[in-house]
Image (cartoon, rainbow, N blue to C red; front, side, top):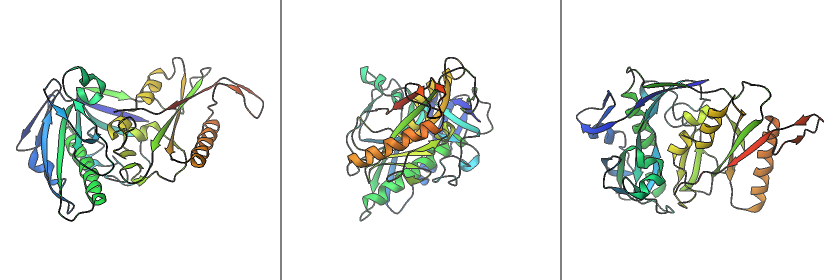
Length: 322
């Protein structure tokens, strides 16, 4: 079982050291930039943008909600910051109301725009968060693949660094998350399938630090999403890119958790790659359905092969964020 310890970020600033107190998150630009030092990067520039500001962030690549399990990251972002072992249990500190956002040019990346005020601000959850924007300059001669890898690792490390600042402070909220293995009884079992776009370099998604391209659908404890087991490397197709922030705050998972024990039983989560050719699409679809059946979820109800009647549902989900 996973419990979120939520610390609300109400104000942000740049300062001489990184700290969090009474809702104010102060970041040392020098400390933050130090986490992004890499031979593939000539330098980075950090800027805060806050809700209501007359600001537009362009060329958005990824966004990450600051989270940690212990000083230095502990088991958060397994395969990147923490070791690649199963997560999704214990306590996770969350800086709600803040995000680390990377912005700039990468090959195959397509435009993503984030407004902090005006009518378009409501189109993204990041229009309501204080965003620490990381802009970057590639090192001369560095490959784009090396630049992208440095950005991803540095962004995750920075997100952990911010969340670590809240360790030792009282959380504003404590959110115990329901365990899908608990059975309220008599309620329809509803699961979620999330497609992860896996179309090669710069259009990929990582699970436990490894590309999910070429994989098969996998059952995942929803708490593993909270702890950063799924990290975005998908920068193309504005209607398809799901930043890491959205995986951490999966809207369908959150709604199923909320309703667990009320009008449904949340049966669990299946993550599925999203290949490009029809044969592979059929393969992953078949395996996703098999996993749902093994987990006690059946699309539309009906009869189990063993003969007993079942009245269960399956939710297919691909979240779109432009």
